[in-house]
Image 1 (cartoon, one colour):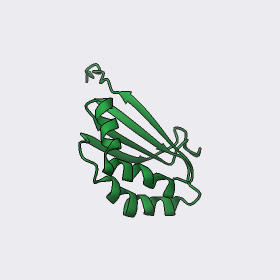
Image 2: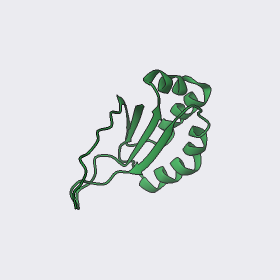
Image 3: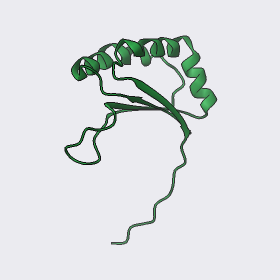
Image 4: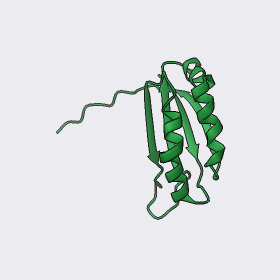
Length: 109
């Protein structure tokens, strides 16, 4: 499974960012077809009291990188990508990777 991670930097106005993302961007992005999974989460600092490196982290999943690229190249994907500058005042980074799941050892109780 391939993942496209989208890292949104800290916006000038976090509430305006969150409102726009929820009310405008998500309805546009939901038109994309072919994703296997989609995750969204606000970033938290590893150390309490520190500012996390990003405001929002999004994961888009498909079987292959080519599938992800085709989804983004579709008219629906292009509309979602074109909308990003309308709200991402803190910058945005796109990263691709192939996920490999590692089995953990069983915990003995």
